[in-house]
Every structure is written in structure tokens, then in C-alpha cells.
Length: 273
Image 1 (spheres, one colour):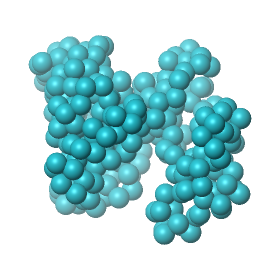
Image 2 (cartoon, rainbow, N blue to C red):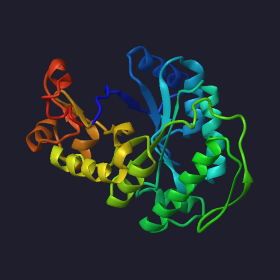
Image 3 (tube, one colour):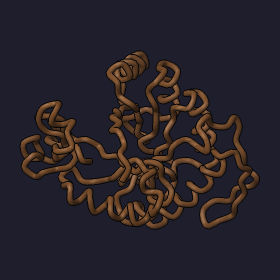
């Protein structure tokens, strides 16, 4: 695998105020983080596209992204329009993260009067959506009549700054999602349990390699960090009873332990993720 520098980002989306949201983004940029990404959901978080547009207007270097858009919430033509507009506004700093939907997406879809289909259906619909998105973002007039979408000579303008299209992150946990990501993604976000070990991650990477073939070296790998140094995310202890000490004992790949130098070293157990 080709050497690639680490990028560190922040998952955000729960500000106390509009002003606080902008100030937080500026501080994250000043601290040297590479990206700010926003989840997609009906509850507890901002709507990602207006939230990211506000950040893009207030910053100059940090990249912005969705983490991740739930595919079933939006028609792919409208999603392509939103993605292209945000890439245009940010002058080429947008990354489109997309997935088939979290388990709690069922409640969101119920509020919209839409069904929460079984996983295989959602995955197949996502695969079709990705094809439409890429075609439109590449500036092509797009028509299709398929199992899930009927699109008639759709096109979007203005075009995104990044060509052929903004980087696409695909969130993947199961085998079929990882195989889809291997074929289509620029960035793959591995959906692992907080207690997953390096061996667990390695098995997912092996599956991705097999699916990606020659393009594997072009794919960036993404993993959420659940703990840094001697501190774990409070949610882990409150919901799962997992402390930093317990995570260290388990050898979880989602935590970086020790000093700053140790956490930056490839010899650190958590740094290989």
C-alpha cells in the first residue's frame, strides 16, 4: 500500500448557537485539523448542507464533508445539486460522505412517511444512487430507468470545482457494503464496534483490497477514534461501560494511547488504523 499522510478531522453538528458554530469551526481550523464533517439526521444535529456552507464561508483551508448522508433521505439528482453547490461555494473543499442509513434512520424515515427497507434493498438503491451522483457531478446529462430511480435527462449547474467529482466517502461495515466501497469510494469509513481490534480491522481491509483490485492504493482509509491518551469518549462509559483502561486492555484499534510521540508512531497499537 502506498504511503499516505494521516488526516485528522472533527465530527461536529451540535452547536449551542449559530455564532458558536462558526467560532467552533474557526478554532478547529486554527488547530490544524484537516476536515470538519457533519452527520445526517432529523434529531440532535444540524442539517449538514447549510451547516457546512456556513463553515465554508467562514474558513479558508479546512475541508468540509457529510459523515454521512443517508441515501434514502434524498433524491440523487437533488443530492448532486447540493453537493455541487457546496463544492462551488467552498472553492473545492467538499467531500461527499454517503451510506445506506444507520439503524436509527428507521425513525427518521417514519417521520417522513417513508419505509425503512431491509439492508439489501437499501444497499442496492445506494449503488444505483452513486452511479447517478457520479454521472451528474461529472457534468453528464443523465437518464435512467432502473429498479429504484427514474431519471429523465437530468443535469446540474454550476458544476463542482473538483473534477471529475468531489471525493466520495462511503461508510461500510458489512461485507457487501465494503465490496461496494471497494468499487466506488475514494474514502472508506469503516464501521467497526468500539471494541474492534487490529485483527478485526485487518480483515475488513483485506476484503476491501480484494474488491478494489488495482485501485486500492488510491483509496483513503477512515476510522473514528474513540479515545485519545488516557481519555475515552464519555458516551462509551455511559452507554457501554467502556473506560480508557478497559479499551487499552482489549487492544481496541479505535484508541490512541500514551504520549503524543507514541500516538504518532506506527508502533502505537492505535496508530495503524
